[in-house]
Image 1: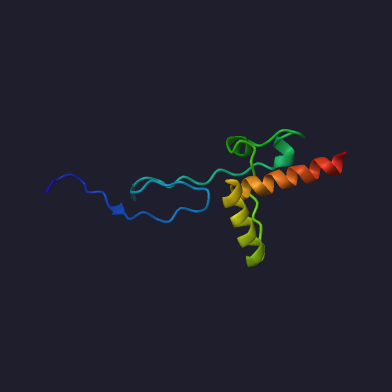
Image 2: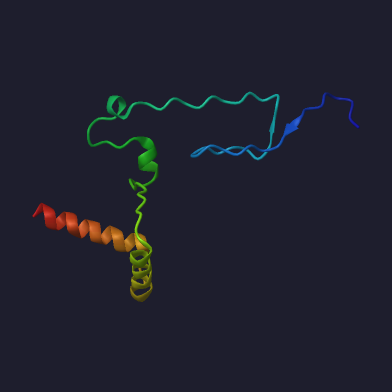
Length: 102
């Protein structure tokens, strides 16, 4: 055994959503406080995206709930046309919005 001071190692904790953590950390290291999120309307002007949105390439996740029959039909259509559900839905929404704006 070494005669130097020992440091205690804690097991990894479950990171919060959107947070990355080291797999092992010492109890001697201070835990950094989360950075405050700026208000979008104050720091970012109209038409400008906050940095975290730019990091995602400007894409925003959307959840769609549908009945099982519609989901199965969408899934089989995607297999036949070799498209993902996301591509099918995104193309349909864009087409609808383009038609609406004309």
